Amino acid sequence: MPSLRTDFRRTVQLLHELPDGTSHVDWMIARDQAGREPLISFRLPRRIDELKPGQRMAAERIADHRPAYLDYEGAVSDKRGTVRRVAWGTVVSEHRQGSSWDFEIRWEDRGDGVSIRQRLRLAPLEDGATAWEAVCEAAEATDG
Image 1 (cartoon, one colour):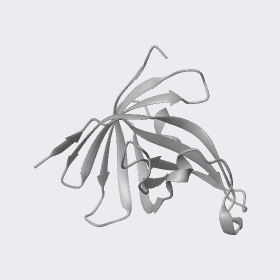
Image 2 (tube, rainbow, N blue to C red):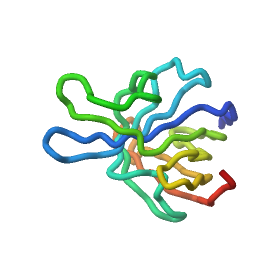
Image 3 (tube, helix red, strand yellow):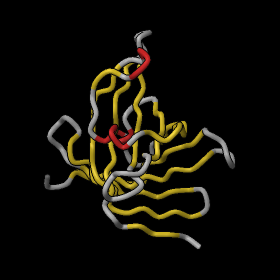
């Protein structure tokens, strides 16, 4: 049976710059409203909030991260580079059916002064795999 959540959980995108000069984006989603449980986490080649309707992006499901990353910016332990928040927002609704997720996210701060609402579908490419695909189904600017 599909499940629908509307509990306004936080989400964040961190630009992770590695010591070798490469970078990627870590997208993290709180499991609970208080942000106390481990964060659902994905590694992305670029920011997901920049996807336009119909665009797709590869996503790698990575280990859950500590809730502190909802607010943390700075050095990553064991000399694994640094992280800087590039966007944050709120999960307005989530619909899960099987292994796929549909999210509606309100991105509040994207560094450009524009807030958007974005609908995303996230699905694994194979059962149990770490390789996923994100698809933007809709995106529109909001009134701040």
